[in-house]
Amino acid sequence: MTSLEIRLDKMSMPEPNSGCWLWLGSTQKGYGRMSWNGRLTMATHLALLTQGITVPEGLYACHHCDNRYCINPAHLFVGTPSDNTQDAIRKGRAYLTPPPMEARGKATGDRHNSKTKPWTVRRGENHGKARLSVSAVRLIRDDKRSAREIADQYGVTPQAITLIQKRINWRHVD
Image (cartoon, rainbow, N blue to C red; front, side, top):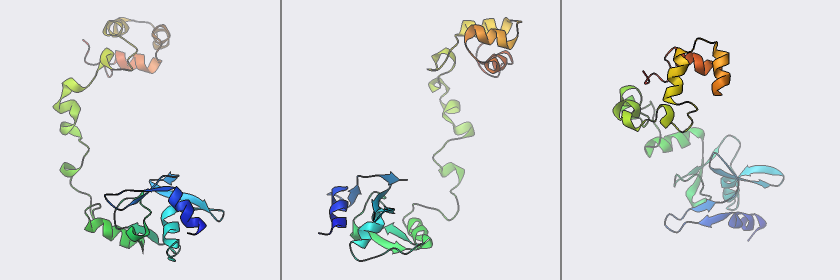
């Protein structure tokens, strides 16, 4: 075993179900990396190097297994950015055009949780970061002093006071 193979072996762990060798060291966006010959290098590139395969500048070490933590050379292939994108499209991990809004995971507008299940949204003093109570909000709305003076009394910002008085924040309170 070469010194590179020994280092890669120490920094990875085999996953018995998939055959992947999971990288345990430093990562960037989920991809393993380590210092080799004085340069910070992608672990996948080093894994291929153990098999005598170099990844030229501008090319990627792509995964057959789709596991970015995997450094098993049998699961890797050298490809262009286009090859990588086409592989992702074939496997349903990417789209040529974005999917329609209905198919996306994030709910917006009328489909948002605050609209479909309003009782689950914590408002006012039920919110974990609330500094004011409902009674304090009512007093703030009736207070004729400057926002700065009121804010100092309640330990909030003058902007918070103005938003309460304009009924932008705490609008659920009469």
